[in-house]
Amino acid sequence: MPETPRQEEDSARIGMIWKNAGWLGAVPILLNFVALFSTGYITRRVGPEHFGRFSIALSYTTLALLITDLGLRALSVRDLSRGGAGARHRLHDLVSLRLLLAVAAVLIAWGIAAILRIAAGDVELSSVLLVSSLGIIPTSLTGTMTDGLIARDQARATTKATFWSGVLLTIASVIAVAIWPNEVALAASYLIGPMINYTMLARRSRAIYGPIRLRWRPRQWRVLVHRAAPFYRINIVGVALGRIETPLIGALFGAAMAGYYAAAVSLADRLGAVIDSVTTAALPTLMRLGGNASRVTDVLARILHPLLGALLAGCIMATMGATAAVTVVFGAQYAPGGPALAIALFLLPVSAVNALVFEGFVAIRRVDFVAGTILRGQLVTGALLPLLVLSLGLPGAPLAKLIGQLFVALARVGASRVAFEGLWGPRYLRPLFWRTLGAVPVPIILWLGDFRPLVAVAVSGGWFLCWVAATAHSSGVLQLLRPAQSGRGAVGGELPPYIPSA
Figure 1 (cartoon, helix red, strand yellow):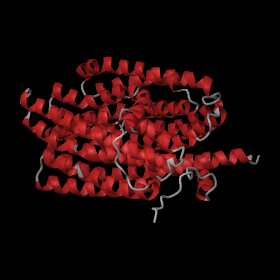
Figure 2 (figure 1 turned 180 degrees about the horizontal axis):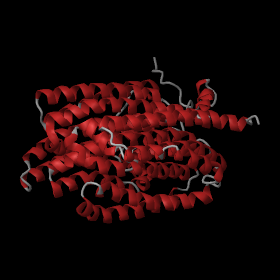
Figure 3 (figure 1 turned 90 degrees about the vertical axis):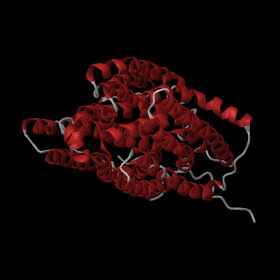
Figure 4 (figure 1 turned 120 degrees about the horizontal axis):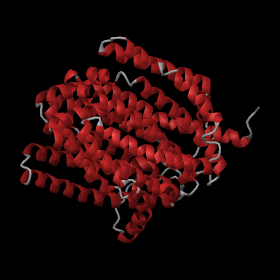
């Protein structure tokens, strides 16, 4: 049957989502996996103990970075995607506020470094934390610029900035550890990426929003923080738990074990960026559907189920090859992190369900309906994290997060069955089940055979690429890109390019 005009419009919107998600996620992810081999060189060069201290300092820096958000990133895309002349002023307010918060975060990180030096006597960790914290300001401003561009469907511009900042960061980090194989040199080289990224994004943002003007508007800042606070309250504990695990492992088992864990889980974190990219790309479209639950359900299903199938198939295929992947990328000395990676991979499909279903509830203006589910999952994770880490070692940290996220997923799926009727019906679950079965032979083959690590990785990766190609062709995902490429259904054009006055 031919599509109705509304169905054609939604197909064009879905095509735009996948196109933007490709720019946001697929290209940087491919580049990240190329960069993994430089990361492998870095981890071999500096050794597990130095890399562990670098990862612990990076975790503390990220914890300090949390106060620059206050839920503002969750608010900014939603606000800026609505367009209008006021979008420029909102962006300027967001940049001004986040700059002030970033300065405060740097001071907090320096305070943590002073405590580590004086109370714990850890001079090395304190030094690398002082250097790492200098990246808080450009990272915070980069996030705001990215949100502003994504709200105008400028995913390609953000990808270009990510590409060049990633290339220069990779080159700088390799050169730094080649000259001085130390965690401080590695932390200093990591400042290159955020600075380059911010410079490029600020230039593109200037063409759309005009020159950024820093404004002292405490009253407006209070309004922004008040509106953003609900998003912050439901995410702050979860993000903090995700960052405290590496320092916890370092405190319990030493910096070397923290290095094993951080190196292995970084592979899953790179894949996790796919979920963030799809969620970010889908949000402006979902917000423009005017709270129509049936249309939100259709768009959500046609985005969620292909992504869920790919993540499920990928983590099943990688089950028996996780240790081999860690060995190939980082070296045999990092092999103890393999089981932690295997569990962390199963967290990805659960996180995809949680993220996209939540955005669906946001689109129909029922945020509070699911906000409480996050708190329950965070409480479960927080209670299990020290217990499982002490009893199971490295795999205990991702297992605690997986169990907590499963609690959240069960509650949200149950709620979405009522709010988004048909989202979990046989129409979508039956093909998802049969396609996922195509991943099952891989762990069986790897379990029965005694393959070298490189061969095991090649078997898993090659089978997954063939699976993705066959699934994309049979499900018609590639056809959705055609309307978006022809310009039909383009969204986000309410705000004209900035033209400076004479």
